[in-house]
Structures are given as structure tokens and as C-alpha cells.
Length: 222
Ligand code: ATP
Image 1: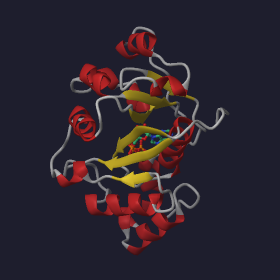
Image 2: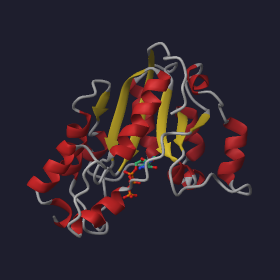
Image 3: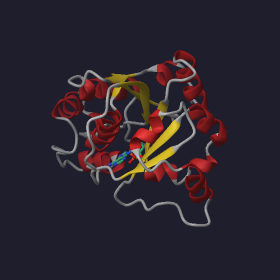
């Protein structure tokens, strides 16, 4: 983790979306490093609605929310937000961010946190230009994911909007992208689901409370 002086607490709000199927320590560490380096008092963890035809085995929204709540229980600044799930239909990220912006003041920095694998496809997202009018991006390097290729739209976007220092994201409400050398944790939910289905215990890759929940409810074919 890049060492910096602990920043002052700010009113800035973090948001991390994802399937969280299940939530794991790669997610938690990413949210934690962004939160601590930016001095965030609020990091919203927002599981998305999943289409019913998604590849099995996967768990329904109630389980994904409950596992996320267990994972975040000991971290007061982390809050699991069920807004996308409660809509009962898929949400575009731009709509979620508009909702978040409507809850905050127009000056509050809003920071959308994602891994490099997600950022590499960012310019294919619905109304991606509008997303950058609503929030900053915090992009974490992720094992197995390289930065965008030089010919890509994402590369050009990064060149235009890059913020070298995390604190640069706190001086405006939206529009910049910080790429961070987050502690490399080669953990993916897909791999976890496969391991669990094959009978391998995924301990120390996700919080113990989440693993107990998975066993109790026999999720992912356990
Ligand atoms: P799957 O393997 O099923 O695609 P996932 O592990 O990538 O799942 P998601 O819920 O899709 O989990 O990820 C939510 C966000 O967290 C995404 O922006 C993703 O890039 C990021 N992320 C997930 N795992 C890591 C990790 N190990 N390191 C850094 N970022 C991660």
C-alpha cells in the first residue's frame, strides 16, 4: 500500500458497485485502501441486481446483501446499500450515480471505486461521459489485469483525466481518475465459486463470517 500521511476526514463519498457473489477480501481491501487514503467517512458497497439467467451457481440478492453486511459489520464507515437490489431490475451505473449525486450536495466529491478489469471496458458503459460528470474514478490495479492498450478509448481518457495523487480527487466533485497500486490480492468471486463447488474451503480469501454463512445456507454447491 502506498504510504501517505493520513488525510483529514472529508465529506467525500465512496461507492463500490459489483455483483459481490460472494464478497471477498479483494473487494474489502480495495474499499479500505481507497477509504483510508482519501479519509472517507462513508463507503457505500452496492450489490447490483443480477439477471436471472446468470451462470449457476450463484446466489440470490438476499444472500449477496447479507454476506456483504456480514463482511462490513466491523467497519463503521462501510455501508451496504440495497438501492439497486430493491429496484428489482438492472441499473445502469450512471443511474445509480445520479441517485447518489441527488442525495449529496453538488460540491461533494463522489468517488466510484473499481478494479482495472472493469475500467478496461469503461468506455463501453452506457453514457460513460455522463458518469465522469457525476463522480471521480478510483481504479485499482488488479492481478491478471493490465492497463488499457495505447490505442484504446480508456487509454486516451486516462491521459486526459488522470489524477496522480489520491487527494487530487478531493478538490472537485467529479471528473478525474486516479489509478492506484492497491495491495495485489489475486482473488475473484468466479474462482471462489468454483473452488467451493469442488469442495475446497476458501478460508482466508473472504471473511470467516461470510464463509460460515455460505456453509450454513449451502451456497455455491457446498
Ligand atoms: P467475478 O469473478 O464473478 O467477475 P469479481 O471478483 O470481479 O467477480 P465483482 O463483484 O464483479 O467481483 O467486482 C466488483 C468490483 O471489485 C469490480 O470493480 C472489480 O474490478 C473489483 N475487484 C474484484 N476483485 C478484486 C481484486 N481482487 N482486486 C482489485 N479489485 C477487485
